[in-house]
Length: 275
Length: 315
Image 1: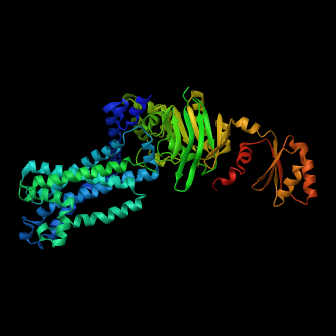
Image 2: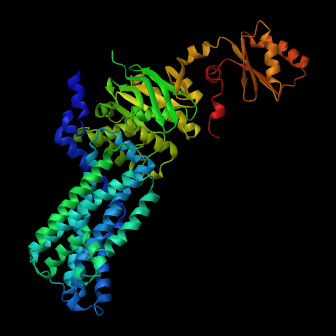
Image 3: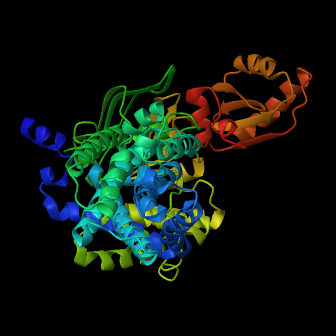
């Protein structure tokens, strides 16, 4: 009897209950499928999620082109400079939007229904990751294609593009985990939007997205250096403008650390019992 | 034999409020047990503990022998749960809802389509299966939820107010499905604040008030325990006077104040009426209406809690 109890108490993953990996895959697949059903039925949403980042690139690149000092941005043109920032901006927007289905599920009771099913809690997060990664990949490619069409040259070539997509994915996973965790712990969607609305834009402006770090006032540079977005932007920006540089491993290291932190925070939020 | 549901001395506090206050009950296998009580009696809180959504403050609860806290995963595997609120994904069809649910309960992938089809047929949603569930009527949504609760053939089905907010026709449909489950031997725990629902569907009832079980038994036994007819007198005032006067009469077993007057329990209501009218006349009381009936569960509720069930129901 004691043995049974111990086994069952560890049965967070179905594997411990003898159902194994197949059951876990079934849970994740079915939930991921739900998100793809959503995007298929929300075509307009799909269209704008892909078209909007590309539009940002065209707007920002075109708008600031002539006001920007090339020696400050250290790039052939502003579009080239902005490319990395737009990719990160898109990831931030996706991560906030990606937590919304959980928010609705929580408020209308669907989440409670899911939580009474014998599924691993992590399958709920993982299914969201799979979906967000898929969407992020398509968006990233769309931005790159538009960038290339606008004459941006990626100095690091195709392997560099691959690393850029990895950086996008890593940051996407971190922020998705963080915002899913937030959606899980806040009381209602009003609080969720208040918090995300308050932090997303400053997070973006207080990074190296628009201006290089060394062109910022000292205090702002200090803030930007503490901002994980800066490392994703700088990592990608160097791959675009300068090719392979020695700063890349450092940027990746910070992003890995940030991802671990967000995953830990997100998981702990999920493990808390919902009211 | 292991009990399907076993709750012992359960307590759940929300800050200073004790929503569940030392509740104990059990459900045997194959039985339909009703939890009858007004809103706020602690029924839903108890159910949320049984379905692993909430941890108890103290006490224990087990489903099929599995502890709801320590063996939550086994408990989740054993139950089907139909919530009070209708929770739907607004973009998915009825069929997609059930397919998702089937996978959440790890039905063999090859069987998913067939089992979903069966469940849809059971609740008569086959034709509407590929329409968005969001556009269903209230009754259809509830039926879809019930189908979801049954899909994986749970050992215990937990229904929280299954007919709340439904029109008469849909209510009867839902009742028919639940009666069908009884024939199939499914164990059902049903929370309700409808007397007719409890009376019609349940093998046994626990009457819950203020987080505790006040009395339990079959609906028939509970009604028989009143042991008398009930005469209801409508009175603007003077209920206490009348009660005092009646206390001296040997044929009156008991009186209880009701929301609009007085309930009087007597062995033979018909022969008692003349006595009552005369007495009221002597006391200068003018009863609005005097009715008598066989005891109902409402009388059982009134007898054991000192207040009526209906008056606490929402408007």
